[in-house]
Image 1 (cartoon, rainbow, N blue to C red):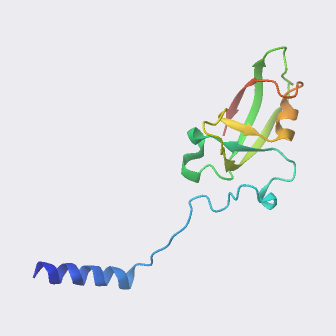
Image 2: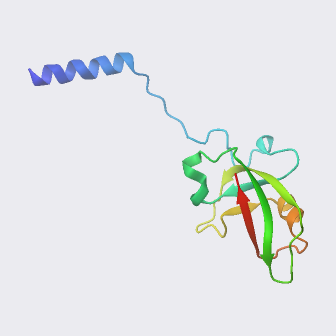
Image 3: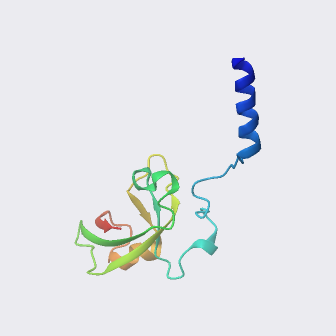
Length: 118
């Protein structure tokens, strides 16, 4: 009797539930340039903020706080998450596009500390 009930339950589930497969972050397509913001201000997120893909498309206000030789510009920028950081381990909370980095730092390739808020 239990086997019959279990079989009926599975049969009902298969008839009434659609199985869907997909990635949580389907709109973040890594190197697909179509998804990048036109202003070039985008980032790849580390696992800490990637949130299993939920951060895809999220926008953050970002500014440089400090670094060696005073690299920071006074500007605050808004960046968009377009991918997860593919380096293991990721070297930062956010890996900035060149344009985003240049917008907040006067010194190319400087190591900077940033402040960010969603």
